[in-house]
Length: 237
Image (cartoon, rainbow, N blue to C red; front, side):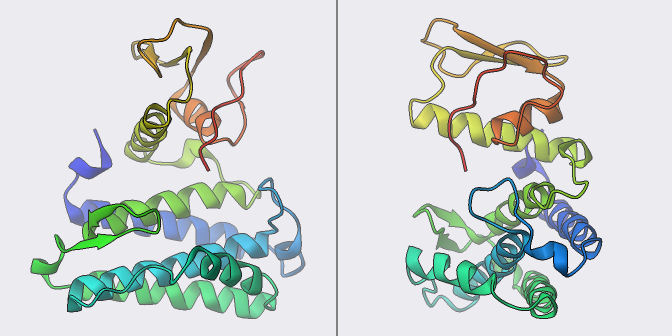
């Protein structure tokens, strides 16, 4: 089942569960550990927390757009997004934690109070896609679940709901196909039929294993649980 097949109330519940999962990982870190590096090139945990906090603020702007009809982009420019994260990473640990808590509360309040008629209002993502504002549930779900793992203190793809894993894999493979990436790759999730990333290409590399492990690999977070001689995934994030 796809995340988008779920009722909106369930989509928002999964996003909130992911937020709670991220919050738990964050709470387990000491203030000193926030400034340690992550596996994301050039980013400390402080960069990650700032990014997740400012992402919630950006989604609030899309919800304002839907509620008022006044165009309010997620970011004024790509430079603004990068500047926010870089400056946010310099905040004190207490300020970073407050940023996360405050923006999470704002986003949840806007989700709860958006009029029913506004949920199909069309808004534009930072990547330029025009989507209904209900897409913010999935946009936030991806951010909080994946970046909870990126904090590097116990988060696991195996903790994700299956519908999130399945939808992530669909998103990633769909992006590879649109960009003509992954020629020759054949993915096999345990219990499912093999699927070529580019169906017209001859098979040249195989990745198979449990759903969580395949998604972790596809998202560029390592080949844990997939055995030896696993190829590098095409770029995604």
